[in-house]
Length: 107
Image (tube, rainbow, N blue to C red):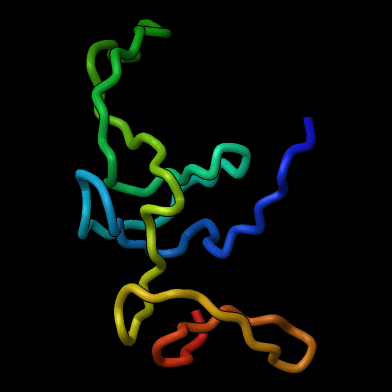
């Protein structure tokens, strides 16, 4: 089975806003990108409770809250000038730069 290669426009450490789902309107930084499943882990978004086992004597077991992955289609990058926006590309000499589609500022 051939696997489709997705070119993500979002990168780690980008600030994104949730545009759909239970956490709509929340903003956070990207912590992890799972390219094979098109899902992204965002700081403070899609929090779930998970039972954690005690591994060492000093560790604390019990129920902890962690961020779960959210589908990339439910996220939109945030521009510093104009808020949530789509991403475009421009050539700056030899380099390709990601830019905001609304105001044209580099992201």
